[in-house]
Image 1: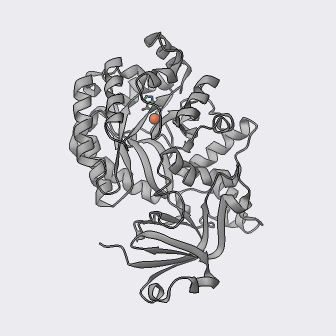
Image 2 (image 1 turned 60 degrees about the vertical axis):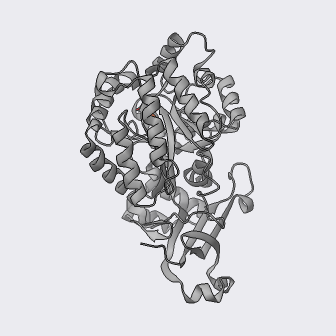
Image 3 (image 1 turned 180 degrees about the vertical axis):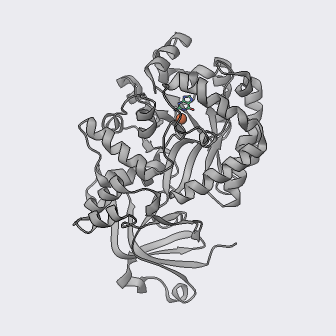
Length: 436
Ligand code: GUN
Ligand code: FE
């Protein structure tokens, strides 16, 4: 179905233009208590006060479709910068830390994705649930099987979503059912790139799982793929768990630290993003900042797997691009709202509590910047793609009770962070079309 030529949405509009930790409020965000968001052919044309609707040309207003979400909060679609759709069936697996968790639960669960039917059913389920949670863009890991990416991309393409996905490259230290070879992984990734990269709004992400499960040869091939086209992405894991970090030092004795492994194979730079980044040295932080390599903050996963507490204040302070991520199924929820609540708790424990404004920046424009997609998504600047969500601030009795006593926008946003979840997501729009 084609996008309506003109869509005018009424509601309380909030979007970010800069990081609120670095800019004064007036430059960091726009908030319109009773505002309009105007789209044409699914693309943002502008925002303004409802009283100034006359700013929209009469010809556009005459032919517009109207969506009245008065009293509800309209935000850009949420951006999950790191998740594994193939782990939706093993989320909440008990008792292990990273390396045992991978062997005991994760690899066996991912082995099932050799079956295209498993992949199709799971991709449909996860994409429907992402939209229900208000997530409109995600950087997604498939399993080692190319058919897992075909299934996810086909489902995302059909719905016109801006999604990133890649096949996990893993040619050692994993069971044969989920192991490829360096050469095969290069061929399969190249095939998937030609099939999906740039199709509609999709992007391909080269996905070496993490340093331990790739031979140097495979990491070299991943680096070559990244350089083979100007706009390909890379995703992997970095410095998540102490035993993992020690193992990487053993496996790659010539490299000065964990990040250096990825640097050595040309896997750092723009459009590369690494999950976790908990146990980084100062050198690694500085090198990530200098090369434009992004970090994904995965608080529910980091707590659930006992991996540690990401130092958002320090990593972002060093100049590293940081996005927020669920990391399902190490993470425990597809909800970016619940993820934000856990991010706050970790930052609070680290004595640098994440402000409500910065939190919602992180879940929208911050994530778009971490993925180098901020020219197309992340806020309502004219020309951006019209993916947005409508949040109901009184979705539960507890929220309604609390909201009735909240005086400022920041207070309301923080109560939403603390008490909210997908029950608050009243609607999700993709390019101006209602998708949930
Ligand atoms: N490191 C390598 N693979 C994974 C994974 O699937 N999840 C997490 N959290 N860390 C990893
Ligand atoms: Fe992960």
